[in-house]
Every structure is written in structure tokens, then in C-alpha cells.
Image (cartoon, rainbow over all chains, first blue to last red; front, side, top):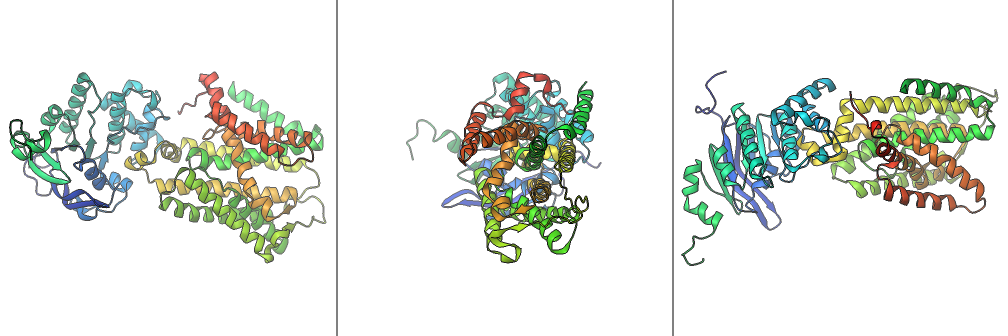
Length: 253
Length: 320
């Protein structure tokens, strides 16, 4: 192992160039540029409909871009199917949780583990590790459909982790959680970060995104309007305008 | 305890039928035959959750292939069933690829499979070289019973063949259930997008399920042709065949190992009974089926197996 993560590596692990997605007349994502270094946590914020989730869909192969490309570890992955993207090492969670409700918690995670395990026993062992990591070890035999929302989000995270990713894309893993659960989820994300995972996180909850991110990218109407450290971004007037509307006291547009 | 019960059931299944009347044996053959077909359908429709409404396509391919090979070339049905199975698997993969490639799911997939089966039925009706609408009557072996030609005067040997088919199919499905493929199919059934995101090559897994399901169903078609010694396009490619195939696993419990068998044990004698009681009024048994389906779908979404599991929670499957 060479230099610790974060010390100016040459190649970004995940790179997005001029990425554009048009749905009919709607430009959902427009010429977005993004480079995420290994070990970095990149927060993505923006108002509803800014194109955040579409960006995730484009990176993970659920949508194919109208223009632009996605590179992972230096090679282009644009146009690959979702499972191929996942096998290369990019795992994701969904904004609306999608566990396999009729399968046990362990089997849910095992499905992810089969990405790198051929044998059932090995996959189940890998799945168990992932469950322990997210704190669901005790619920392994329960049906996934019976979990609370917070635990379902953790389960989705475990299933993603079981695929052995290098990059993790988290789509609003905090939404709908109580304050205590949010703190728990932030702790979990910090632990994943310590393990060297590169994380992209979409989040509305500013407390969470500020605590987690090395840098923040702000999207609005499909375009990147700002990028920088949490502190810098939160002072950016364009961000304040996009996020909070025009400041009180001034006249409307 | 469970293995003791299974051993006892095995002894009964092997030892009792020789003492039964031909009609009782015939009913048992039908029970096993439909249990086998349901088990074959279950791989794709139950485990993978891809609801096929056109398994008659595979059934007919199996029946026609082995019958033509036997009648025209004298090839043993044992080889014919392999040929029919492989043809059906290939056809299934072709149709499956087209359907899955364009993202057809749920009712759309069901409609496309129905269309594929109907297409084959129409081809068979219009293709005079393979008998056209008249079908094919299988000449009986001059030497009487022949294992090589899979022809017997009595029903009993067919019973044992059907029993072997069911046991083999159940063993295969059980192996799939516990394998990597079993996990992947269950994931696809539960949520296809989440499966893809978790690294599952859903196309490939569905095609494997399709190939296995089609192959097994085609073997059932060969058995049908040998047992009834007559096939025509409507009998083996018709929509009612597809319905008969999927009814038992749906009622018994789709996606469960013993669901199709249980469904057949309940439905097949019932169908024989309604047919016997209401003679001369064709269609009444279909009405009974329809009513039964409504009841099952409304009150027993997991089929009979699902209902039993709710009553006896200990029967829930636990993977080792």
C-alpha cells in the first residue's frame, strides 16, 4: 500500500465528464463534471428535481446518458448494465428502499455477496460480515419485510457492502429516520469511510452531509452550480439561492 | 421423523399401485404427470417469478419432436425426449431473450409467452408434413411392451415412469433452490432492479430458469404423447395446456418445492371428478377451475403451501 488515501492520488477513482441526460424535453442532467478521489466522501446536494438521483442512475447503468461519459478507475463504464457496474466495484442503495421483502435478512445480503462468491457457504459468511458491520447481525434470520425503515436502509447498505464495492453510492439513506437513527447512520457512514471506501452521498439533511463530506457538489436544474468544501459551499451565494430561495428582504426575481 | 415419513411414502408409492384398478392407476398417472409439469413451470413461473402463460409451446415441441422421431425414424423416445428438451430450451431462450431484452415483465411477459405458444400451434395446424390439423396417431409396437419405444399395454409402467419423472424434477428443483441460482432467482422474483444493482445478471439467470423449465416441460410432452399415443396441435400447443400446466403450482404454492405436487394432488382428482359427474357438458370443469382460482388468489396468495405454513410455522423453509 502506498500513500494514505487523500494524499493527491493521480487518477480519480470515479470520473464523470460532460454527463447529460435528456428525457424528452426535460434536461435532467446537463454537462455535469465530477471527479472523486479514492477514499473521498463526496456529498451531492440540490433541490428536488435537481438531477441527483438521475446522476446516480447514469453512473450505475440504470439510465444511459444522452452524452458524456463515466470512468471508473480510468476505464470507461458508460453503457454497461447495472450488474456489470456493480461487479466492477460500484454499489448503490435506492432512494426508496428496495430490499427483497420475502427473503431473510441474511439471504438479502447473500444475494449481494454472490457477486464475488461462487459457493453458497462463502456467500453467507460474507453476508454475515456485512450484516455485522451495519449492526443487523442479530436480525439475520428475520424476513426483510418485517424490518423497520431504519433497519431496511441498513440492510440495503449491507447488501451493497456484500458486493465488495470500492465506491458506494448512497441515495438519501437518512430520509425518514428519527434523530437518533440519523446519528447512528452517520456513525455507520463514518466507519465505512474509515475503512477506505469512496462514498458518494445524496442527502437533504445538511447536518449529515456536512458531517460526512470531504467535498460537496451542488446540482440545480441538472447543472452543477458549485463544488467545494462543506464550509465553502455553504457560504456560496448561488447555493444559498438555489437551496433556500432568494434571501428574505430582497425582492423576488 | 421427516425422513421416516418420506421412506414410508416411497414404499407406498412403489408397492400399492399394482393392486389398484386401471382407472385408479390412470388417475395417479395424471396426478404425477401434472405435478411434474407444474414443477417444471415452477422453475420459471414460481422461483424466478416470470409468469409464463405459454408453456404449451415447450410441451408441444417435446411431444412433436419425440413423436416424429419415433414414427418417422424409429428413434427411441428416450432420445426423442432429449432432442425435444433441447429444442424447447433453445426456443425458450430465443423467446425469453427477446422478451427480457425489451423489459417485458408481469402481464406483458405472460401475453408474449401466450403469443409464442399460439404461433407454434398455428404453424403445427398448417404444416401438413407433420400431420397438420389431423395430428399424429402413434402406431402401436407390434412386439407389445417395449421400454425402448416407451410403449406399454398396461398403465402401470407409465405410472412408474411418471413417478421417476416427478422424483427427478423435485430433486433438480431442490438442488436449484439451495444453489447460487436459487438465491438469484428468488432475488429476481422479489425485485428485479434491486437484483441488478446487487450484481445479479438478471438476463442470464432468467434464461437459465427458462431453459430448465422448457426442457423439463418438453419431456412432459413426450410422456404425454407416449401415454395417450395421439397428439394434435390443439392438444399439445393449445392455450388450455398452458392453463393446466400453471394451475397446479399456482394453487399449490408458486415458488415452493412441493406446491405443484400438492396442487396436483388436490386439483387433478377434482378435475376427474367434475368431468365424471358432469358428463356431456364440456366446460363445466373449466368453470370449477375458474371459481377455484378466484378463491385461491383471494384467500390464499401463497397457495396451499403458504396456507399450511401459516398454520404450521415450523414448516417454513430454513436454509442450512
